[in-house]
Picture 1 (cartoon, rainbow, N blue to C red):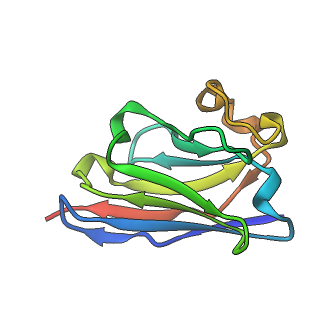
Picture 2: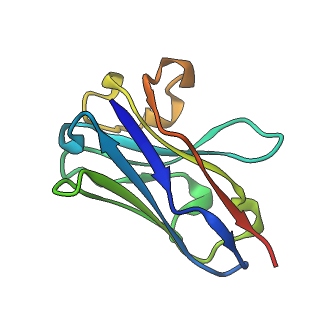
Length: 130
């Protein structure tokens, strides 16, 4: 079971990037997938989560209206479209999943203890700077 995040890079404030989380060794369609980020000198934090079902996705307040999470089960991939990027979005971004979620993010996904999350992808660095 592997997750791989990609798509990061250097972008100017106000720009856009699309991150990709690709799965191998398992199919994503029954898993809720979360995006997390860790900025320099800060703790890792949840950003967004999409359930395996048709439940609406979740976003933390700091990215609402700017980020959009989506999934393509045929491609076994989850995306994070990031628009109107700000310098404070600079971080290493990770995708992750855990059987604890049972395929559903719910309102508590963001509070899941990170040490309890079984599957983390390697991160991708997003730098927002002029």
